[in-house]
Length: 155
Picture 1 (spheres, one colour):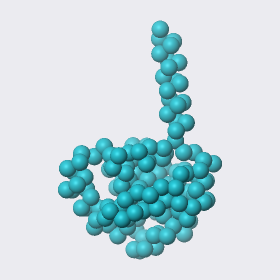
Picture 2 (cartoon, rainbow, N blue to C red):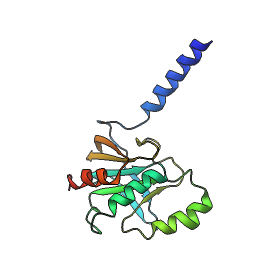
Picture 3 (cartoon, rainbow, N blue to C red):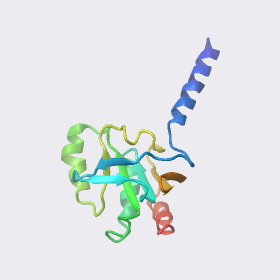
Picture 4 (cartoon, rainbow, N blue to C red):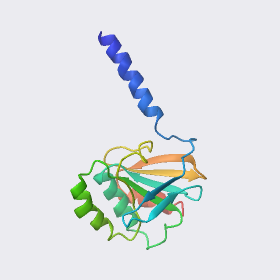
């Protein structure tokens, strides 16, 4: 019986991993609302996609983006945060109003559906480098300084 449970777990793990974008995959163009309710577009013009799956990863992105002059990354970088696990009242009355003070847009995935296939880990920021909508490289960061360096070398 233990053997079958182990086999089942391996099959499920491979199925879950298969749903995550990897190098060479093509992203589906997406429109997502930002913290102001404006549409944020991920399309063939997007060169870099930043993603955070939790608050700690979001802090890495926020601290990194604050190092750049306002508007410097606007045409090249799209930042999306998965906030679907955040309690609704916390999101509505605390987190989103705080995000409205940022000098950059944050696409907010409130249901977790639009970002489900994006690669990411807890407490880390994900940088996805794109050519058109083709994933060229995926990097994870747990320190804002390293993310700043990675972004600066691609400007």
